[in-house]
Length: 83
Image 1 (cartoon, rainbow, N blue to C red):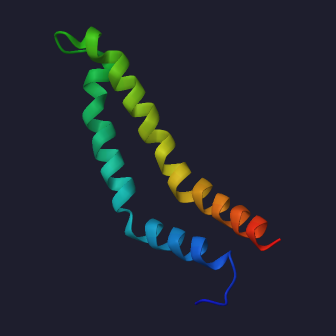
Image 2: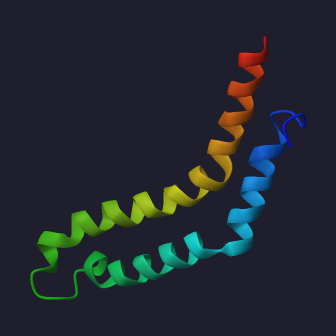
């Protein structure tokens, strides 16, 4: 709704993302796929291990940023805009 204020859209958006769980399930599948590379158990895995570790770290940080930090920043920006 247009007159609900800045807090309502992030809350509704967060609920929609958490309920669907598609982002979390996709990230989990990719993380499981990167595990053999991160453990360097395959031939040539030593070369790909740093890339897998960086990808896993990025994916682990993406979920809290997308679900919690971005909506909070939206609320803060909306409050500053209203001043």
